[in-house]
Amino acid sequence: MNITVIGTGYVGLVSGTCLADMGNNITCVDIDEKKVQEMQQGKIPIYEPNLEELFQRNIAGNRLHFTTNLKEAIKDSTIIFLALPTPQDKDDSADLSYIEAVAHDLGNLIDGYKIIINKSTVPVGTSDKVKEIVASHTEIEFDVVSNPEFLREGYAVKDFMEPQRIIIGSRSEKAKKILSKLYKPFISIKRPIIFMDERSSELTKYASNTFLATKITFMNEVANLCEKIGADVDMVRIGMGSDARIGNRFLFPGIGYGGSCFPKDVNALVKSSDDAGYDFKILKSVLHINVKQKKSLVPKVNRYFDNNLSNKKIAIWGLAFKPSTDDIREAPAIDVINELLLKDDVQISAYDPEAMPNMKRIYGDKIHFAANAYEALENADCLLICTEWSEFISPDFSKMIALMKSPVIFDGRNIFDLEVMDTNGFHYESVGRKIIKS
Ligand code: NAD
Figure (cartoon, rainbow, N blue to C red):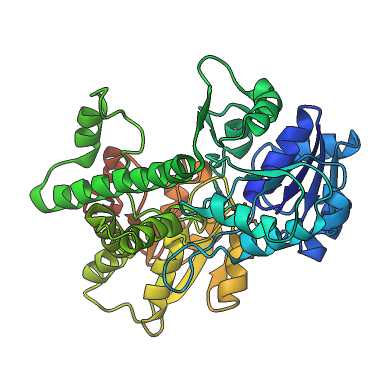
């Protein structure tokens, strides 16, 4: 099938590349000329495991094309995916301006039946809005379908290729038939397509993301309580997770959720609910708790150093909002760094395997970016762990101690065993577990 994907970010590029790998002919459109030029030259603009190989293979196979020209891109495609940004607006709602702008363009450009499929996360009613905008420019037949994307950065290729389910929100039999054919290679008995109306589909995405944000936040609250009453959150987590009704995933406490989705999606659902006259109290608490949790390492550091961070050198491992991505949107490391930089004379030396170029765009030379994890530790008064990259999990502890001024770790991701920290002589504070004193 000939398919157009509008927007070549984490969702659009992964979707386009994976659909090309199934033999479809894909044209990806983006307004970012530099990005498009680079992709035309075979340069992949994001870090996502296993994507580059597929990207190169499908460019070489002449199934994956890039352009800034929307008119050309949609000429031969019946299927048009929207994978456009829906960032948080000033009033906390999802900013639909990117989607609306493209809907106007499509209304002016379509020259035959098209299915406009929205993969972006959008408030309930957006399909109707897009339909209205397109129809205001054309008499030509088209359908607008809601098809929210559930891929996770870091596992995006696997998630797209083996989705747990595909949600299609549409009442058009014609569109449903074409999309069933398109998605056939991706589904099985265990991985079904679930058809529903557009509004239910749009809400399914928000309900899923905000439920997961709530689950994380609930565990962070349990962990904070553990610290106060001397329980071990690891034990509590294992005990809870062995109950099939609860499940053992998304129960790991830490320094809050970040990323390009959960924060904005929780805000947007709260705003939509308020607008609809519904007070979604649990999500309001989630928002409030997460803001505090993202900074929660800093009070621990302050307490340890008696509120005197003057001339302290603080090492940070992990800047991305989670491992296996270079994405730093709403990363807890940013909250931690901003809070530390409020203090005079704190020096920060940070390391991340993939996210440093993005972080450099925010902080420039305000912080030092180390060449590797060990260099970040040189002469450091303490280490803060903000992202659980696998390369941090089994380090050379004696080398760490030799490099650091004092062997002190504040771990926001609970990556080390307490006994190992004890045996190696670290002062170690993690989330919801007892403090190991050196
Ligand atoms: P992104 O910011 O990485 O990419 C968006 C792309 O769209 C950019 O390359 C931008 O240049 C391009 N763009 C903007 N306006 C355009 C226009 N008029 N024409 C063509 N291209 C245009 O965004 P993303 O992370 O891929 O997210 C896209 C949507 O998918 C959002 O609604 C997001 O909430 C949702 N989503 C994201 C993820 C994720 O893990 N990133 C997962 C599921 C759903």
